[in-house]
Length: 309
Image 1: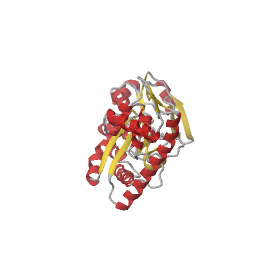
Image 2: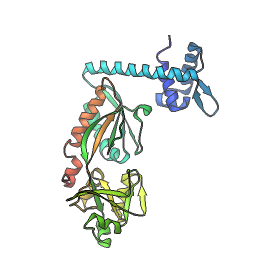
Image 3: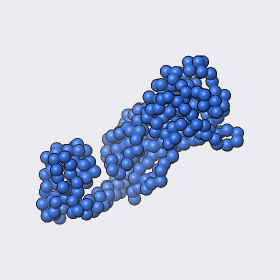
Image 4: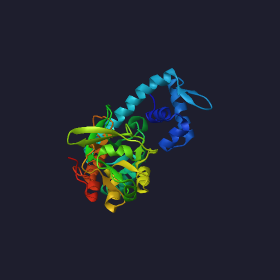
């Protein structure tokens, strides 16, 4: 019978593409990984990987073994989740993914309080504005904003997310303040590159929703960098209030077109579908929903931003 401890090592090698990367992920040495895989192959009497100096790939036997190994790991995790649920207090290592700017501004400051309240949990926070596959990356949970694609993941809404049009007082003094969204076509607009359509900004007016095609000379894939250029007076931009709130409260940015709302989106907690949701995941989701403010996020309250009509 295969030593069960070899299964997560084998899966880690396939997911990370090398023995060295798997070793880093597992926190063991490369030689330990190589020894585990060698012992596993000897026990099975089959080669699981094609090896070269530059890469490894699965053999036919490896592909077959992987399908069963992933199921075995999933069953082991289900068993662990079920037992942990009976213990009451959340324990274990929690791997959390969050967007870069949101993670810096609102997740990292919440971590000390969460860990103080949950001494049995250790937390690993990974921040990236790109889409992260939770299963492939081994994440327990992700915080995501906006419209979610259809998937097998479980999603729970934590709070509403509003966006606003903003600019610095200096820019508005120089270029004038738009009175209607169509006036934006005559302004230098700054854009967030990871938006579904960075140039098209949607508004809600008395006659319903409509879109304005904007233009500008600067586009960036990070909201914090975008807010920095807006404060510097480079133009007009669209920011989520969790970024804009502190700048609005300090007077460094001004809310432009306040009579025209933008479509509301949401902040979600997303996690892989399981029969038993780990207690550590439930603990963080409940904590962070309360920390943020389920109906009105604290960043809207602090900046005096009211919910769109």
